[in-house]
Amino acid sequence: MNIKERLPGLIVMGILALGLGVIASKFMGGSSSDSGVTVAVKLPELSAAALQGKATFDANCIPCHGPNASGTDKGPPLVHNIYRPGHHADGAFFLAVRQGVRKHHWPYGNMPPQPQVGQSDVPGIIQYVRELQRANAIN
Image 1 (spheres, helix red, strand yellow):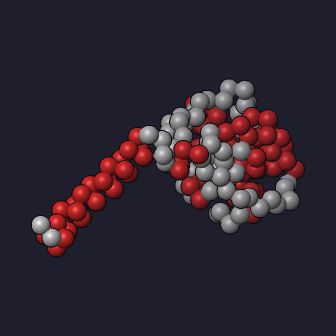
Image 2 (cartoon, rainbow, N blue to C red):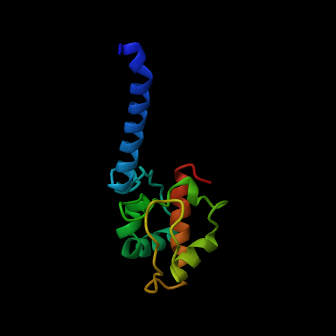
């Protein structure tokens, strides 16, 4: 059998091998999304309300959402178009703190409720995140 006769079979075998490699990578943790998504955040001069929100955010949210809401391997960046006000309104932040959030949009697990964060602290967190978003052209 010459190479011309074997070529179609070799092509099919190559495609199958590539497909199996992709599947194996997915199931064996080879996905680059496992390391988390982080973004570079431009820092604006913050209002007094946002500074209060930053203090609450820093004390409670940084472990998962990162400094300046830039994301980590445990939680998504909030300075991201997905969290723009038109897609995740301010009420979503209140619900996230009170009820937690089921996994969606990102490869992270569910966000548990945050009972240590008072509902009266949430407006400051929202102000902080929204000011960061505006400074980074997310409206």
